[in-house]
Image (tube, rainbow, N blue to C red; front, side):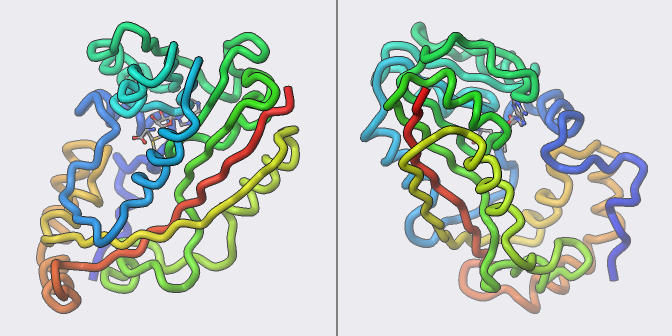
Length: 262
Ligand SMILES: C[S@@+](CC[C@H](N)C(=O)[O-])C[C@H]1O[C@@H](n2cnc3c(N)ncnc32)[C@H](O)[C@@H]1O
């Protein structure tokens, strides 16, 4: 029913450096452009609640995107630093930054450009997992590290793949994300590691939102191609599967709290 969109000449894999740069050039922000509604508590609110409890002193946000979330901690901390590899996001962040907030461009693979034990708290909200070991170096011994990453499913998720086969991946098998996180935590030197799996439900209200989702961060030409080749199919399948407030989607996240040992 649908072409393989990944074969389109303009297709970029989501979350790569190239894809992030293109998204930044389009909107300047890492922010979803489709509509969705949460049912119950959003997982992100649980992260925010946890951070509110422990955040103080000098704070680092790794993979901060356009810095909107980083800025929100300005009143609670002495200094907040946002760090991200995408120059276009950092440019937006710098336009709106609060006085005790600063932003640094860089890629975790090159190491974090901060002195030993500089921060009291470091966190990531959906950013990379390649900095845990560096996190242990730049956060003072006993300081807190909070990690929030999209998670593996448990068979309940994957509704988009089931409703729109060929357009979205089927439910994943195993726990590839957790395996990678655990491997990196093991090498990090962090201690007192506590991991929670969070589940949230969202509703996608219209077929238009599905089309927007498919083209997120892709070129204008790609978005046009999606519209031309998928519009009718997406409408038909949406009608077939929608219930309540649209298409129900289950998302999972990992929320990890650990202590730095220095
Ligand atoms: C999914 S977005 C999350 C952005 C923001 N934290 C939020 O929650 O909206 C991931 C962010 O991490 C950044 N990023 C990904 N890999 C990175 C790396 N290795 N080093 C630095 N930044 C990275 C991307 O540029 C992007 O802004």
